[in-house]
Amino acid sequence: MENLTTIEEIAERLDKLTPMQQKHILNSILSYLGEPIRGTPIKEFLKFAGTIPSKDLEIMKQTIEEGCEQIDESEW
Image (tube, rainbow, N blue to C red; front, top):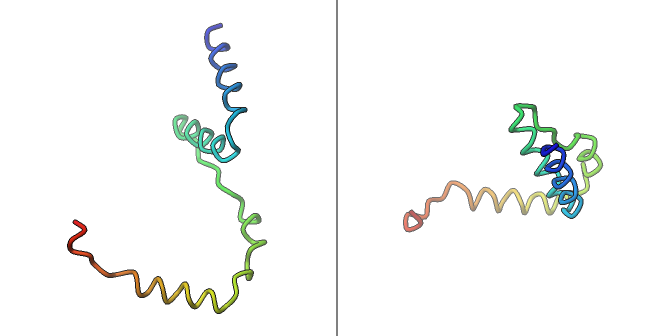
């Protein structure tokens, strides 16, 4: 009976979390159980394919190339 009370309390509190927070909790539970964590289906991302303008992609690429592979020796 004690487990049922705990489950009910968890369910009540989960309802107050954002969907993203709920997903994080679900992934934690799946991890504890040794089950695979479910991600976002690729179909959800495909709707964004081709929506970033080529000019913006080039700017992003240049920024990554300029900002990566550089060492800030004072950082460590």
